Length: 613
Image 1 (cartoon, one colour):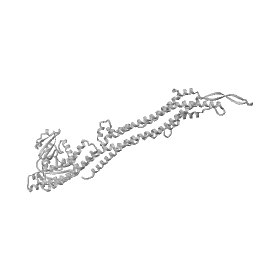
Image 2 (spheres, one colour):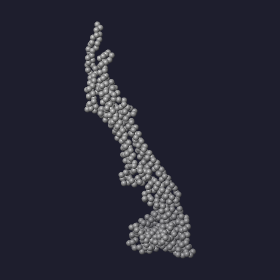
Image 3 (cartoon, one colour):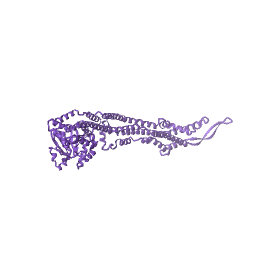
Image 4 (cartoon, one colour):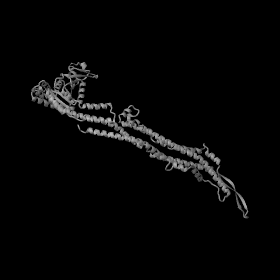
């Protein structure tokens, strides 16, 4: 017994150490700083930490009657397990450390109970079918480092046993296949090993039991070489042992007992476990732990990286929104110039209307002159002249139901409606945002049950933004509404001013025209030689109308550099840019924060890839 204890103590002092706990804690701290860890991930971190110092798990497996229980007793240093556990129960028995020897039974319904060790030999088949697995606890020092799993094996007729054994092989840190040394390499055994064990060569050991049945070292060498050839490529090592002699040596305290124990081969098995399986377990644990941490970080990295991508896209949408289509701007400017052209045509039509309203009439005039005798005589003559039937013309031109006035009202309406179509062609940012949301959130869009969990899984600096981002569309909607109100006020004012000016213009020009005709007549009557009759031309009337209506003012508003179209474009671009910049500033701050977190995660992943374990 002292030989085994000294051997275990010696290897315990050399046990491989690693800083995995620091990596686990650092990863958990990093993610917790920026994300709300869900319960599943918190459990995972706790599990990774709890498994760091977990004992080595070794599955002991073999065909029926291969001496597995005897071998385990030899390893444990005393006869704890009754022989034939597996044939009797066909259940996994986990053997671990406990202050007292006891058996715990776990049932398939989730309950468990305790029973004496004899239960393993006495359990009835009907009860056995209700049992999931066993745990046996023994006060053996070796079990503080190693948990052994006694398994059903692969030659059972029950497929469930095979499935359980395969699942165990994937999970354990080491596999010990127990075979009888004088019956090694049977076809049935090789078939099992080829189908189930060869995939785990790096952690597999073959133990050839009952070497004490061989006559001499020659037979031992022959059997060992045959096993190595038969099991080529399946095991990392093959060790012949005598479990019976190992147990026998435990009962003896003499030097013969120590030699018998050393010759049994059990120490070589323990050495393989400590020198091969334990360092390998530590390395595998480091690899699996680091891989789990990297996968977890990548999950959270992706959780942030995807919205980060779509925030960049939204940034582009905001930068381009308010940059108006040049073709549409050109069309708007053309519409403004068309309004002025229409105004000019209305003035021309009014000019023609007034000119055509002038009437030609003959009037008699007296002209005095001296005859040949020097006597003053008066001669009467007739001359045609223009007169303006003022009342009739005013009545005609100012009547609201006249076709002439109707045409002017069309102009007033066109001025009032100016820019309406252009404003309608500005894309609705709510629709732009809706399309962006469908791409960015997919099935997690607002209004779906998945939206809130999605948002809560984001870093805190993004959560509030994702809840409130629809306000972006509302701010643009409000800005455009104000622009429309402002535009409507200006165009209505222009139309009303023109309408009022038109009424005054007609009256003033008619009065002026009538006055000039009368003044011309009076002057002609006084001195026909010096003052001709006033003969108004269309150019005269047009100039009067243009001056009276203030055509230059409307030319400035509709045609020249600072026309209403260009003013509207400048206003739209300025206001929308101002609104965009407000949201862009917020987005850029979010992006900068995101990039900092993503960079931190990338650097942490690189550190986890460093082969420091």
